[in-house]
Image 1 (cartoon, protein in one colour):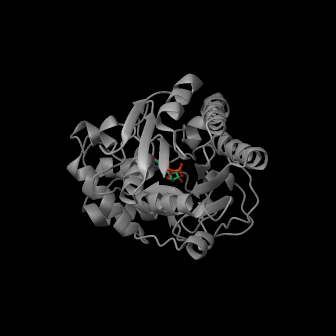
Image 2 (image 1 turned 45 degrees about the vertical axis):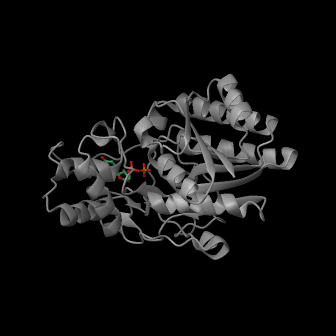
Length: 329
Ligand code: UDP
């Protein structure tokens, strides 16, 4: 297929591009490089620097590349920031998604894969969280993804667009050649690895009074290559299915303290840690029930345990202590 990947220079998008190319698809990446890195884009993919806020730029790429499918990764994605600055999310994330979707239906795109989020499950009745759980966005970020899921619902009903909404739990780990490099970094695992690299004095653990065994937040960490594989499976499955919703995680929860401990084990560094106040918008426990995608599409994560995920991240971060600034890979 001919796949347009928005955000294909970013952490998850760049790995998805590699997986798409390995699966024999043609790929064009559209990215404003606000957070992405041009060197992270596979050389076999076409690259266009542009912004979803400018629909004419999107239209031009649609005319030139003529994609039949879109994977949409490009979005602001920080829960905490979205609480501080809600319009960046409720405004930009939604209007950029609308520009993309409108251009997609105008140019005959048939399939759409959305990066959605576990932040749709702020108050789950059942853990692990399956696709039948009620949707309660936990922050303006989660709400922005919910809006796009609803818009997709109507694009399917009114325009016949086939789509998959993939709700990631906590993306983590690195591939051999692609890593996690955000500026500023806010994610737990890369921040702890910065401590292990001597670039940061200590890690602050946000909240130790959650209703969890050790009081710190519990998350389901899923390897970025396993996420990428799920995208390729979902894209191909849209031949036989019109609408897919999947929760993507390993089904195991690890607390912030357990993540810190695992980094100590993997790196051999003592990693000083301190408790800090809760971060706004963070639910206590997020663990996925991914039975549906395993059964329906045969998704089979290759990194089922936290240690192997952190080992893959440590390998990349210790080889690239300053991220993509260090080398072309
Ligand atoms: N976290 C933390 N200290 C940090 C960054 C994150 O304690 O410096 C916690 C955060 O509160 C959450 C978990 O680690 O419970 C994962 O956060 P991250 O930002 O990596 O991913 P998110 O869950 O927001 O997608």
